[in-house]
Length: 385
Image (cartoon, rainbow, N blue to C red; front, side, top):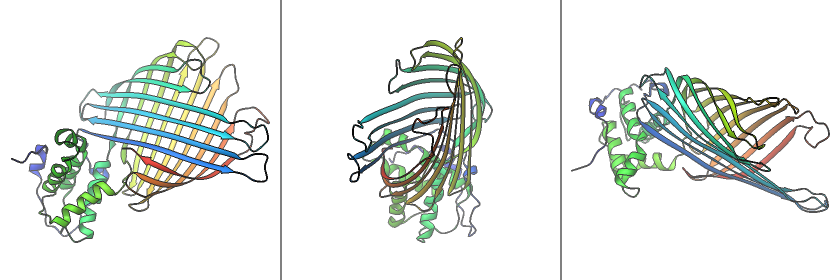
């Protein structure tokens, strides 16, 4: 007997033979229990020699990881970001310098009314490490918020899958919005299929249930096309919705050696898929540590716009603002603009061309960062998940 973990809602989907396209958008996706995972390693290296005292070089490596589990009553996110660099200048006597920083956190939003976009309470834990620290950062926060951000990536994959079948004449008519939802629900359960059937065999069951949700008998060519879209085409994460949060907690230990300091935070997120190829996101976090005579305030804002030019090409743009205010030190403001052209050599490996502008205002003159920093680099990114 064929095993299936299709939700019972799929049985209610009625196939349609209409010849007019359904006006389906990412906002039509109603998030069910699902999980997604993004993991990347990025590397860039350049070296110069000739007409200088010694060869100079710069090596940069970074890693990013995000895993989100979503269900009607909760959203839980595990996040990691780290980078390291090693460089040497062109002048005689310039020594090799290295630095690193890494942070990891887990945030769990628990909704008072399951399935709603209303109020929730949340808990957060964070750890961090960086060059020349006295102690690692450890902090905990408890607070409340309102709103919900929905991961709509399964729906954009369902839309792309249907488009691919129609382009090859393998699917006639236009599926209903309910059919798209049913397909997306099965796509969202990929990790569940993998756990139940094993990594070697799960795709047979997974793709078979996607075809059942589609409500159309496909040829072998159609099944192969579904496999190609799901495994060989890179589709970036899509989200919609907004939320705000505020909490209080404690910095158990900090980079400067201080410990057991009360802290406050306010955060907000807004995600808007402008169309099926263009995604806008903005995330803001304000934090303050209360320490008698040494209070600090930090503000971070990241705005991003990603355009999927084709199945193989993404154009990613971001603006990162970081502001730090300390009672016993100069305020520091950093603005970073990044524009990356990313060509996917495979579903996991991409070639990147990145332009970056960096403006740092630290209140200190003649320390090597007074001018606008400009760079154009080439590198590769390997997608682990």
